[in-house]
Length: 278
Length: 124
Image 1 (spheres, each protein chain N blue to C red):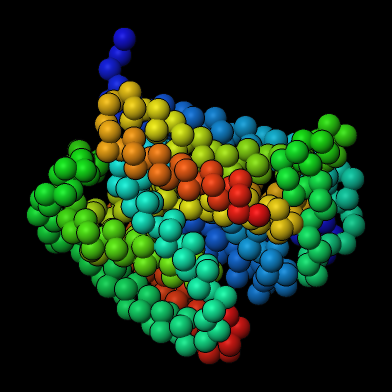
Image 2 (cartoon, each protein chain N blue to C red):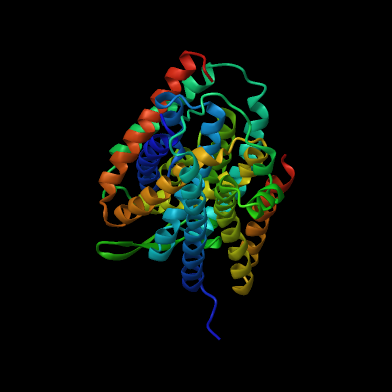
């Protein structure tokens, strides 16, 4: 392929990645890494560098809309970020010591189950969390826009959520996967935060987490300008569109898309674990 | 003087993010057009890993190469600006929480910012 053709193909794939990443709170990396490595045969290290940039692009591209509309909860995001970052550092440290391929398989199965559960839940039926003393003290309770106007919500099980966020960070560091899926699941399932608030708050957090490791990848030369340029521009365009759609989309549809994307991610992890590629 | 509350904070954060993203995208696009103008017809694959040149791996190297009108360095500069947007967002939140006199969140945000800056500066 010539540089021009390659750039256009990568731009289009990245636009889809940014669109799905913004809509689900998973970031663009979920699509960018497998597409570049499996479809285009790009070296994994270049793909990881590009994927990291794509996560920041999704996060910042979609965030302007989410913050302005009042979906993402910056207090919850900032507080949980305190748990995720040390978790990720410990996970990355352990990664060099756990050569087993059983881990991605076990974790993939867990993720598959969680994806199934998240996609099935009917948001209107789901009872909102009972007020939690810690959540009240931390000023987590807020409101978010719905078709029927601003709807207030409570946040439950803060301690469980904090612990899960630590685990989310550790597993993402250990397996080298984006932590967005676990963040959304922890906020949605454990803390009972409304789905749109969960995905948009995850969208804020993944940008911060990715920025923390950007220095390492830049200095190791993983960020190749010619390859990352169409990834960044594509993901950004896609994420802006995805953010617009999230605002008007029904929660049930968003849950379904989230379930499918996380389910595919889990399957990919299980297969690569079985083939011993991780 | 207007009061510092969460709504005002969010409006400013949204503007800050949009400005950062648009600026970085414009720089990457400029570098990209310039890069493609010179290399559009050449074959490319990125199948074999060769670390990016040293001048693209640090902020000082990148700014030096931009000064020499290196197109690929212009792309890299835009990417560095993009990486800086979440950092700027956290830093701004710190200032805003301080204005709100919300001590808990000043502390929380300080921890996040410290870890972020530490890993950006010292991890390599």
